Image (cartoon, rainbow, N blue to C red; front, side, top):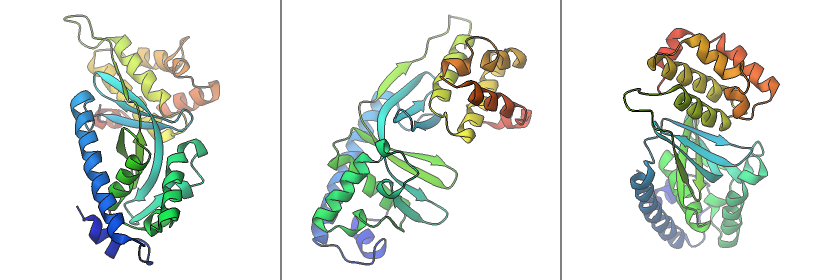
Length: 265
């Protein structure tokens, strides 16, 4: 990992920092604090072992799905890293994000303006992944958040901070019966709730739902019926509109058996 002192010398804005030594010390302390918080969450509910992540932009909830639980937490986007271009973009400058997800990033921007920290006030700059973690750690400290998370979708890495994570255990199957259909439904409902505006994530949820059902010995036709045809369906329970449900059901026609087999559950 690149050190914070190297970052202020080699990456980001061309203008030097005012009080650069203070900025470096604050970055170091923020990262140390974040590492402690991260270890706490790893021990408490398995942070880092999730099988899927989603950020519900409507509710502002980060949702992490585990084999036996779902963890949700109010979240704020701090910035995004394009690993292909090597660009970090602050959330406060990303108008594609709802304002309710940019409030904490804006606080960081205001802090940067007040202290002359160029990395906090330039919208986009060349970075490495470690630089993004330092920015997120600083935001976590300044905004008194509980922890931070990086969600990966293709070349884009979304860095968020969150508060008050709540773990909801999934129902244990009856002894000797393995995973039940209701377990599968409950997981799918939570996963669909987390991605109402992301077709790619919806496709992945469909694949995982069908694969888990097959592994549990359930017929695909019945799984599809439960997904969007019966009342209430999985998509109904996830709060999807009729139009959005139709889009998901239409998507099923383009998903191959090979795609289902190769997906990670």
